Image (cartoon, rainbow, N blue to C red; front, side, top):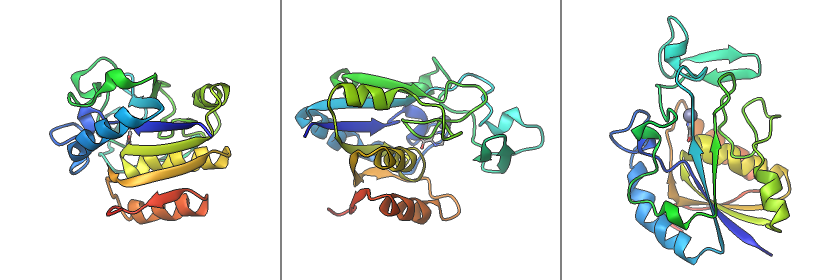
Length: 202
Ligand code: VGL
Ligand code: ZN
């Protein structure tokens, strides 16, 4: 068994003060650093959108952040502009020990398709390449932490489980956006795919 720790989107824009702040998003950083220190393999993901990305409400006339729209690949939440390539907000949280990472995988760079998951874009079909990286390194077991539990952590965990990886999500080292019941729905879908959810107090 070879295990990797995948730290999802611990970036300034997802922390308090950022463009798409997740409540308490910064509270998980020091414990994630400790976990990274003990991990065999560390992978970071970085949400990385071009300006004018199709997931931004500002790219759709008359739409506001958190509205839903229908994209060619299905329903899509519209977000405030966030994690724009090269911007301060796209940087990792300054206390996150990003130097510890073996791999940093960026996602959401396709202007026409959002990408919550570290494995596939939101068309559920276009791969990011992470699966090949993990398989060629002989990694079969994943621990996931980060932001946001109900979006990027959820989609990454579900895709990884579907691909046959053994996946544990440490809820204590995640925080959620919780939009219209999205947190409960995310927990249900992760459990349904066989993801082990380690309770918040665990
Ligand atoms: C995320 C919304 C938009 C996330 C990324 O990291 O969970 N959520 N882009
Ligand atoms: Zn995004």
